Image (cartoon, rainbow, N blue to C red; front, side, top):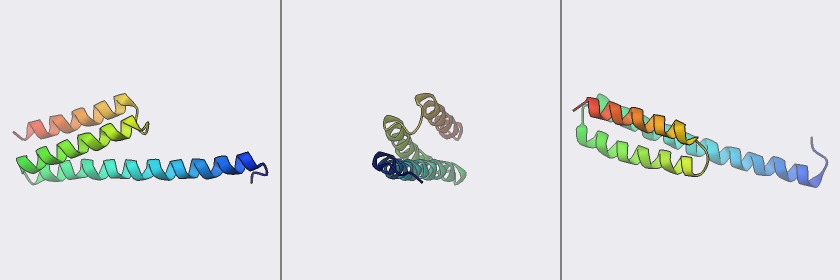
Length: 87
């Protein structure tokens, strides 16, 4: 355990940031699952709406530094391919 005041603060700040990152990543995963669920149900309109929402949440996570830009591009690309395949 840390004894120095600044080290104690770093522990608290890092825990706060880790919790925030975990919550945002979990939200992105939920959005991605919604896209695939809409694809499974063969609902083109719902899939398109879910894709838009998922893309937005992935971009926001990337902007906040939670995902690398290439990771977010890969995720968005795979979602687009999956939605376009159902047409």
